[in-house]
Image 1 (tube, rainbow, N blue to C red):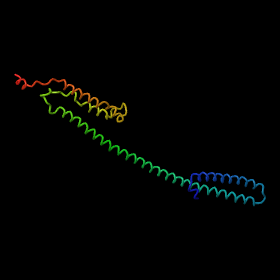
Image 2 (image 1 turned 180 degrees about the horizontal axis):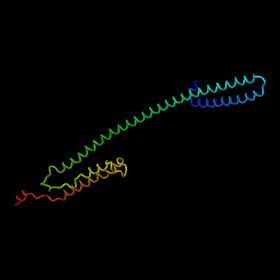
Image 3 (image 1 turned 120 degrees about the horizontal axis):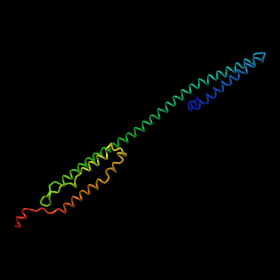
Length: 209
């Protein structure tokens, strides 16, 4: 029985074969018995066949009972296997969830950093235009320093309505050239300052007069 418990699936198939063999043997013996009833004058052979038939029927019944027990054992074994696989599957998913949680923390920190950098970017424009020396340069205007396009690029990069391609994976592509465009505007602003005429100072005019 230890062998049966060790591999109930294989044992079940063997028992089914033995059941079929016992039933076939019983049928064959019954056919022989009918023939002997017509041939033999005594009953010794008939009784011997009856005992053999009964043994085969008993063996068939035992095989059938063992088959039911093995089927139950196979069902329990399959149930236990599925429980183990289920636990392993859940553990694997929990591990993936933990990795996702870690990525979410990194993502939150990165987005917070984006917010901080954008705030620094907008503050930089204010600093550039603040404390202007009107005695050295005329009022500059700030067209080249406008940063609305930076905000627009960021918003568009993460806009889930942009379904033409993968949204997040193309954030880098959608924001590509942002720094170059900012640098180009800054260079144009500085160049305009360099070519601007020195403002006329009324006090200098009076001193010259």
